[in-house]
Image (tube, rainbow, N blue to C red; front, side, top):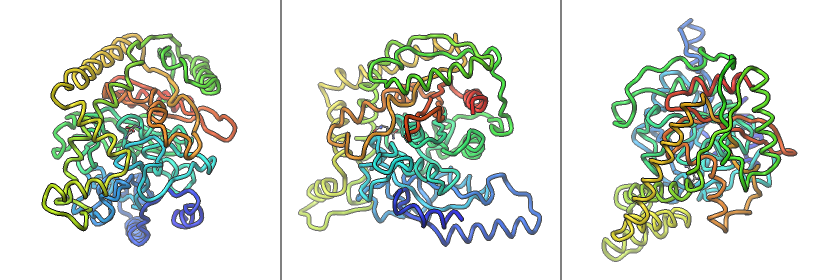
Length: 446
Ligand code: GLN
């Protein structure tokens, strides 16, 4: 039925880059056989899950939606994929994204545009637009995305699904094609809080292949869900409700806040004054890391290589000029600039100082609150083509999400209303490793 649905709607939605039909049927059959044989099965056994195309899947193309990796087939799988294989998930395919996860609309994909299933003239958000659209369109119940500055939460919000950006270090990044290594995290998207909790439990945990992954025990998040809000203090950071946030979005978030209050939560206004500088800090730090991470795509080791070149330097230049799209080049240039001598102190170092400040302000907020409640994005999904010519306008859609990555925190986007046909998303932010608390709060609301 999942493959049938993909065949029926994906021509319009355009979520998938690769559909692994044969693999899916083969795996589903194996699970059926195990079931008939009475073997104990994981709750995710037989569940079809789509995977963002920057997560390596052995033997299945992993393109990062770039010409650079158009024909790249990884010889190994990411740790999250190996974990899902041990749960007997059904791999249905790889989904579209902004090229190398740089973008907020999935329009920078080299292959195609993905459309928002709620309104086909609008973007699904990005960069994990395929991951959100395929769940929203009923093609699959669950997917994996990655989030460096909002790429799970923004598309979840625009498409009306649930998306979790986990605490930095809780999910292994081994096999995730790096964008900004100090900010990147893989996370789940799904239709309900319980589904997302289950997938998160399956992928989190220490991995010796990722030295930044934390050594700690995690609960069974889905089994531990509890809808009790009594006495829970919910902070409303006033900077997240300021200029640029639409009235419809503000109203929907406040309605959700009052619903939680009715269930026993206590609302409290808080302030995170450095929020205004977060976009600047984010685009400097993430581009700096990207310029370094993307240096490996040189036409020698991976993927695309320019046809005619004259010596090694020319090979690099032609390969990178032809293989990367405009947005990726913009980030590489920006990142190279802010790291260059003479500018390092003026930009990169100051961005890192701001990071400390933003992190400290969150820390203070969590002394007084259990959870923070904000919009996920200032507005609902925009029209395809509306922002693509104006990078600063595109970057501004990330204003509510980037602070979370800068501070390494977990955050969950849950649907909380509509403006016409367009879903509105609410973001719950917590202290490090407080995923259960975020999931419980959303579960009580849902
Ligand atoms: N939109 C942000 C950017 O373009 C976030 C991307 C992401 O989280 N991967 O950098």
